[in-house]
Length: 402
Image (tube, rainbow, N blue to C red; front, side):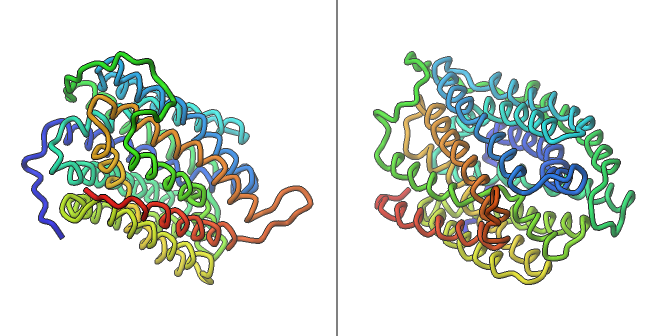
């Protein structure tokens, strides 16, 4: 694996990594507990949980596209990024008052709008701050910081759960409300770090209006986008893996341990695998990650115990480490600097739009709808593995590599 050389990374990489670290400390205290809060406290079924997750992601998709293209038009990335993080921070406290699933949907909606505003400008700002031969490392290091924040947030949440309801099989409202209050602190710090220390990267404005069009984009980017959409159709919310673990016997504290394992693997491997993509090429690493995902999902479908789900979720972290940062670096490889905001907007919007049917399909396959009882808890994972195989076959057609 390629040796890491972090000393040469510019200031913006460190600032954006710190911002993502703090944001994920806050977000991951809550995000992975929301399906348990919905199921255990509010009594919501998996179809509605999938619907909430799908709507939350999809409503952000067009904002991701517009914000990325707008940052190209303005030639400015930083303050759109700050605005997006700020909106997500403002939304979080309202989860404290949630007494019906509509509240959760509203908070998730606002949070994802904030994510939609910030994601493409942030990725373009990061890509514009580093040389091409460090791009995989920079994105991998950013993902490592992001995931280290998730690990830290989960550890804090697990501590709160241990102190308030150790050994209890289901999450309680009081515990969830305590975690909401704690999560506000790192969220505010993240916005301050970004606003005070990030530097704008001067970019020639793109005078064309924000657009949905792929015209003028590299054909390799278009094919990758198609493959990513197909893959995402089977990549339902990780909430279903959490519910699978609980369904196979894990209590709330054990679920938190499972999530900590996933994030530890993800954190440790993101930087090295990002650097590896600079050496062997992004396409090979993404293909390998997608195939690994398919095997993990088949394992989840066949799992018989909570311990098996725990181990597989840990391996799932290796898939994330190999693909998340690498895919962002790959997009930057394929498009010119003045169109990167638009390209990241298209990529993130396509993924988010597909997330709605992905999570809804998973919920329906698991639980059914109306008088139809569905295929059971294994079905979403079998479907996801099939979609990963199909997406890999399409992406394999991209012959050139970087």
